Image 1: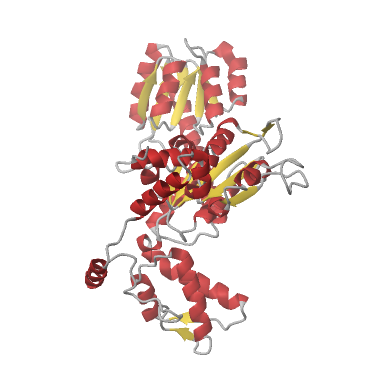
Image 2 (image 1 turned 180 degrees about the horizontal axis):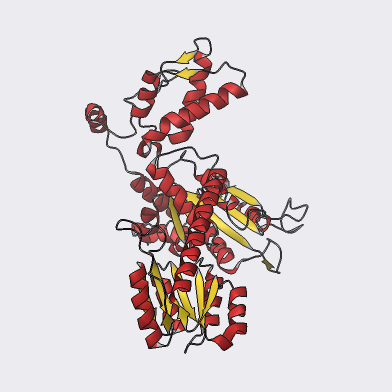
Amino acid sequence: MLRSENSHKKPPSSSSTAKQYRVLIADDDKSTRILLNHFLKKMGYLPVDAIDGEECISILEREKIDILLLDINMPKKDGFGVMSYLRKKEIPIPVIMITALNDIPNTVKCIKMGAYEYLTKPLDVDRLQIVMRNAISESELHDAVSQLKKELKTKEIFRQIIGESSSIKQTMEQALQVMETDLNVLIIGESGTGKELFAQAIHEGSKRKHGPFISVNCAAISHELAESLLFGHSKGSFTGANNDHEGFFEQADQGTLFLDEIGDMNADIQAKVLRAIQEKKIRRVGEKIERSINFRVISATHWNFAHALDSNSFRDDLYYRLEEYPLYIPPLRERKEDIPFLAKHFLEEFCSANNIKQLSLTPEATEEMVEYHWPGNIRELKNAIQRTAISSKNIGEITSILRHRGGHIRKNDQKIATPNNCTHLETSCKKEKIQSLEEIERRAIEEAYKACEGNPTKTAQALGIGRATLYRKLKKFGLN
């Protein structure tokens, strides 16, 4: 039952244009729900009903609720069960307990579990209104503090990543969402976009931040040494193994393993990497025992994996294991508004480190940089700034970025054929029939296979590839 003596006032910030707060009423007593609905609407709230604890949780999972009025004694799942769910999921919603007079000990228990306040039946509407107003005010203050903490954390974690464009901010927001989880992240982006900086930021913002961050360039690992470097080896396991060696996976225990340029990983080692990631166990070369390790994988690539998967040059099961959460880093040409900030930062940093009087960028130089397409992305921009600073240190200002290096960068430098140079390319191609890389590869495999008299092991060794790769190539080119 409800009782009231005074007129009802609107909740905080309530007006024709202000937010209307959604209140979830979880109570198995129909009459209580009807009366609460009536009075909450008069107060300016938007009430939502749940007849038991399970329905209450279901609503909380799919809808945005600002405040919860929760009865303790309900069928299917009681108030304690709902409070346990809120605590487990870390849902910061203010909860006002509704209880009978003889349920005070249980209500105190709910308060210890995180409830904001409790009210006894029959409910005093004026008391309910005051408690709800205070709970919402406190909740809004908590949200504001949380937002401030989030902004400070973002600035600290992404301190090495410079940019104000919407595209880079979106990437940072996505990184923030995933960093506190343990999902494997696949960072996709062109060379020079800062993939490793994002990997380090995700590590520093994760629960593994006190553990190691082990960076591995997969493109730089030779096929012969890959297994030893990744998984380690025991003393005497092969010629030159004079001591036990911890591989990169073991070194990343309790931390993060960053596999850069994962698309260049040799096909024969991919199966072993997949097993290590799936089972969180590794076996050193020369050992029979397995070692359990706790790590998270962040990988990066500039590859187009769609083509790699279609051509069977990369295992699809490993790809899907790595790509639990994809993160795209935009190239510099997609975030042109960030170029002046990056250029100023690199210029100040280089001048300070090399005792050069601080230089300024003229508007013409800035415009020139913004117009250029920067195929090498941030790395190319940084190099251009540093070279130009050396050339301009006696002038005091930089009037052009794109003309200060041997072999000059120019605005018309393009990685792709343009209408002006297509004629030249077409003329060159007519002079001589150019074979495609695929045809050259096919002929090389065919000749090696014949020279080795159809022995697949010798053929694979002669070509410097694994037998599994050879079989895929033979199938691809229709070579029996």
